Amino acid sequence: MSEPTNKKLPWRDQKDGFRDALVYMTGRMRGEIKSFRTPWLKFNAATTDGIEWHSVTIIGGRPGAGKTLICDQIVREGFIINAGEDFRVLQFQFEMIARTSALREYSAFTGKSYKQLCSADGINESSVIEACHNYAKERVKYPIDVVEDPCTVPEFIQIIIQYMDANSYIDEGIKKYRKTMITLDHSLLMKLAPYKEKNDMLYALGEALTLLKRKYPIAFIILSQLNRDINKPERNEDGNYGNYVLESDIFGADALLQHADTLIGLNRPGKQKIRFYGPDRFIIQDDSVLALHFLKCRNGGTGIAFFKAEFHKSAVSEMDTPPMQEKRLRTS
Image 1 (tube, one colour):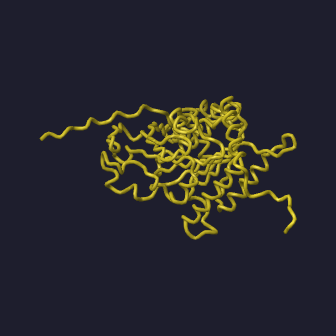
Image 2 (spheres, helix red, strand yellow; image 1 turned 90 degrees about the vertical axis):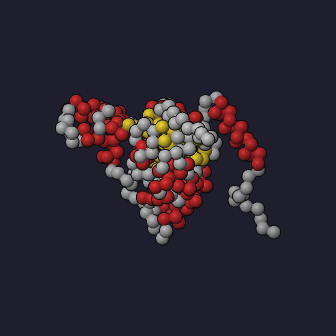
Image 3 (cartoon, helix red, strand yellow; image 1 turned 60 degrees about the vertical axis):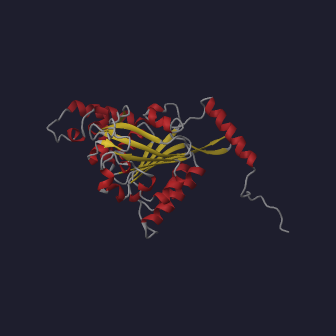
């Protein structure tokens, strides 16, 4: 028989889980433990009063649906809404350069469009430049870091491990990690190597997200595309159930779904010329209406919430649920 060692055993007594749950419940009841609140009450209500730490949120939608808009606003307003909370943000921005992202943020702050800020509409106001300069001086005080060069899944893991270690601290002789919101602007922009197929890469990415969220106090927001099936003509016919975004519409759904704590399918019905959305025939007034389908909320409820995209201000706001078209009764 081998001698006992000090090696950590690969199992835990179930009482540890019950104890940890009670500690978590007590901390939340006292307001000592909080979720990361988003700018929208509907979003927070669908989840656990916001995005929980140690979780993965995946938002899938067509190009131009507003995925990046939503993610950017969560980060942009997060430090104000969650004032007093000690956290950092690490953004993997592979789709747009930092300048473009900053211009979108200036747009949200000033209410001027991207084109106006670039003087492409004949507007050139030095006062706006000064206001943006003053905004930037305050904004850069927030602990936000950006990774711009696309990386492989193994590199993604190593960057996050390095980042969490670099921002760790010692408390009573114990190494602790700061809460960190990590965003990835598009899962498909990860480098494919060492995998040959996109689905293989996404399976590896999903496993990495679960590994990292369990080890560190991280909240991931991952943006994803939809499968081409969503573009079939019959799915864009008024009043069709196919109008709705389904779990299977998320690109690589089989690879990512099991790792997601919250899965959101984002749709912009007006852009597809849908006037009466889904079997409930929600009346869509224009192409600024966004439908967020909460397809999976591990610790919340599923359903649809409606928002309004203000692309000219790079912002998203809440709106009332649209009225439904009156259903005509058949006569004999």
